[in-house]
Amino acid sequence: MAVAAAGLSSFALLYAPQPVLPQLASAYGLDPGTASLAIGVATAALAVAVLPLAWFAGAVGRRRVIVWSVVLSALIGLLLPLAPSFPVLLGMRAVQGVAIAGFAGVAAAYLADALGTARLAGAVGAMIAGNSVGGMLGRLGAGFAAEPLGWHGALAAVAAVSLACALFTATTLPRDPRTAGSRRAAAPADTGARAGTGVRVTLVVPVVVGALGMGAFVALYNAAGFRLAAPPLSLAPAAASLVFLSYAMGTASSAAAGRLTARLGRRTALVTALAVTTAGSVLTVSASLPVVVAGFAVLTAGFFAAHAVANAWVTADAPPSTRGRAAGLYTLFYYLGSGAGGTAGAVVYGHAGWTWLIVMTSAWLLLAALIVLLTTRRPTSPAPAAHDARTRTQENQRTPTS
Image (cartoon, rainbow, N blue to C red; front, side, top):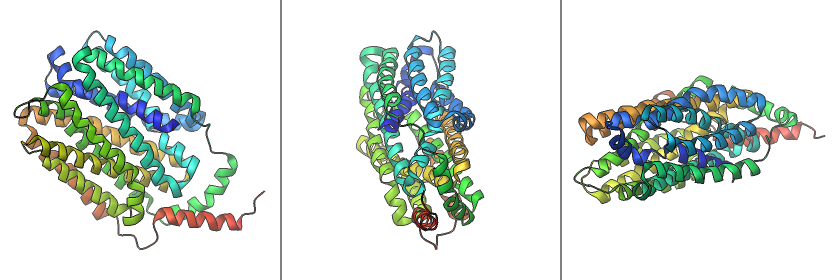
């Protein structure tokens, strides 16, 4: 519950400006590509900060970094509506992105320490489900509050809720679970798992998938407000923000990612999720509002499942001594993809329209799926989670307990 609250707070703050990008563009006289920097700057700053903060968390404790991350980012969110100009707002968003990196880059490693690799896919899926709830509520809250309160009041309202979640995390998050004894117990099993896997492929494949998938996903949602407000759909801001209810599909699919991986294997599960994301994005080309809404629901479900599988893949295969850095590496490229892809998508939409945006993002998603297929082999041995559990059981039987 504490980690879920932290995720809700962090991702509500990170993406709260997304539904009010048209209002920001109107207020400051910006084109869609420039307005989208309110998202891109924060995610790029998060990406730059995530590896240093993952290293720092290994020295001072992951719990401490998570707590400071959520509290500080919420406080900056409360100050954000006071920014006197768009450049100042971007500077504050960059600082907020650095603060959020403390949670985004450390949480998966914290859960791995607490639960071990055998249960990690389900745990990370549950964590990402909480993250998606935060992203959905932040966007919906800002979208609905924008009409009566303006974009200033909308961002302040999201920040107030996020601060309450951050305080809950600060008071309930258990202390760092790893001890010297747990490190010794985990080391032999981890060594066996590491010896049986290709470390280079283990890192490169899910990291590339995270970057390409997140770039496509954020590009679509950055332009969604403009697309829904323009003819022929012509929706009001509050009605357009309802598209973020699609995140409920992401919540369900990421929570189910662990079961999908256990049934299909992570290679097949990841390719399937990317194919679903691509199919959903193609549906949004339609001029029919129900079809567009269905498309966003499908692509959101597919993306969050892919993200959960790829994230757990990186963290599960890393040895305990480098788990934090491996999770940080994934998060680094994930948010580099978000910043670069989101901004590029808004520029393409502004100059060429929605159809060409779909062409570009579909190419990214299909490239990610092709990389998975070409660089990994279909598993012939038991799933990694089951293998880790068996190895740990055998090791425990050989090692006397004190």
